[in-house]
Amino acid sequence: MIADNGWTRVVYAADCPLCESCGDPWCTVHDMHYADCPCIGPAEDNVEYLAVDGHAHCRRLSDGLEWPQTLILPRVCPSDVKKIGATGYNVCEVVIILVIAVMGAVALFETLWAG
Image (tube, rainbow, N blue to C red):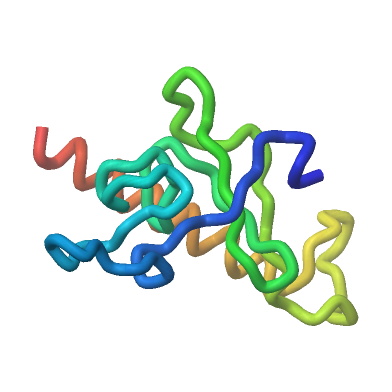
C-alpha cells in the first residue's frame, strides 16, 4: 500500500546531520539544507499522514486538496475493543474522530470570527 500510492517516510530535522558551515540540519538525500529541501516534514499543509509499523509516512495531496478523501486512523487502540453498533469503529476510534471533528469546528469558528 505504502509504495504504490506515493507514500514516503516523514523526514525529521532532528534526524538530519548538521551543516558543517552553519550548523542547520542538512538533508543528505537532496544535498541541501533541510528547510529548503522537498522532503515532507512532520507538520505540513496539504499533506496526508499515516502511521505504519510505528513510523510516520506521508504523501502530498493533489490539487491543493486540504482533507483526505478517506479518514485513515492509526491503530493506536487494541483490536479487541468492542465495536460500536453497525459503525465498525471501536470506542477509541470514535473518540479520535470526535476530537478531529471538534478541532475542525474550532478552526472554522476561528476563521469566521476573524473574518
